[in-house]
Length: 360
Image (tube, rainbow, N blue to C red):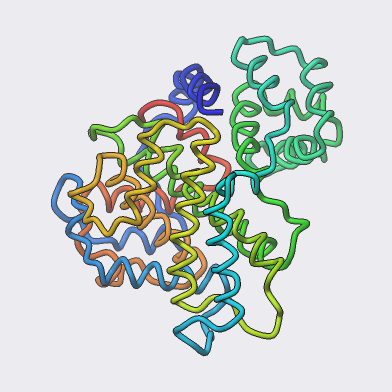
């Protein structure tokens, strides 16, 4: 998977830079206005100036939002949560180490990406291939009918949708879909509720990582992918939670969420290795659970640490769970990090893949 993603982004860099030229973010209503209140700090990358208390507070609020557990009665795990964690421990220690929990990527996706990469943009042939996968059909039609393309009249045919999206639009959409097969919304309640929230944060973490990589000794694509893949383990863990939750005891205590994050990182590393992602990406994810200060991490690990923090702030602000102007949240951010948070607030979901290719 990693090899063709690298080729994809290498080929799309120039077009992405043309389609998304660098410009100052324009604050919009709501979150963007709040983000403009972030205080400007010292220049450079200053992840070490964010305290553990700040980070722990954001992590706690984020986990509570994921599981809608703001009113969870206990700090410590209950019997149901203990059973879930024991099952996950068995999964990560198994021979397959959790990689079997990820559904295989539909075979049509690499074929489509190869056609798009080679410039073989034949509408009828692309339509035929896309029609082989119901998920792709739904996503192509959804995007073509979105406000981003302002079609005017509803688009119901794949051929018409392909013309509307164009080569770059299809390339970006298909790359995103390549990661989404791990989310099976036909599963239980926790997968339906939590998986889309994890995916939204992964998208924004990837954006933040890409922005923070400018001027740092890290490969932009690798830190971008680290943001996308870091929550894969948590996402597949939701299947275990759905299977074992008894419905009588709540799930989402702080102790449970802390332990779940550890299992999620282990599973993400196992799955990323199965996908042949580079060691740099896997090491960056692994470092998040090693109780290191950012200064002691690799460049990619340090970027992921801050990108994860900023993307959680952005997501929580969008859902009214915290105020980014609160000094306990934003204090200690460098100019680059504060600017990154402002840009996150200004980026809509449809823009995130376009920002992946090339420097802004």
